[in-house]
Image 1 (cartoon, rainbow, N blue to C red):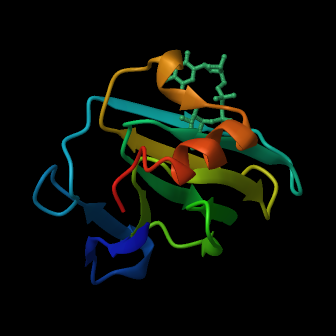
Image 2 (cartoon, rainbow, N blue to C red):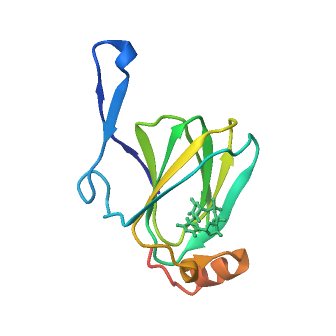
Length: 138
Ligand code: T46
């Protein structure tokens, strides 16, 4: 997992705000087939707690602040997303959870594949078993 800094164009007049952009396979390391977003979540709530067998994703907090916990089976890393011009790339085989740090923060996700429930690992013991048997080449 790693933070990506996106291109940003900020207008001369502050009231006009900023525009952020990125292109598949160019500014982010995969092509996306699916976009989804999560909103209306209250502060302190944690979602996620799963890993993906093959899915790659880019997580962007487009409004508010969300802490992302990533666990590769050996160590955990915590990243606060609070800048819409940055995204967190989360590759396959990373156990992750998202904690809302502010009410109504919005998490936008770009995913490399269409939705497939069989790609999810929702049991932590199963995740650790797969890490130990080398399911993901690190
Ligand atoms: C992830 C984190 C960051 C669909 O039907 N289609 C979809 O594309 C998605 C993403 C979800 N769903 C269904 C599956 C569940 O019945 O929506 C429901 C909620 O999904 P889930 O409980 O998995 O939501 P989160 O917020 O825990 O996790 C989501 C993604 O599912 C997951 O891939 O990495 O956001």
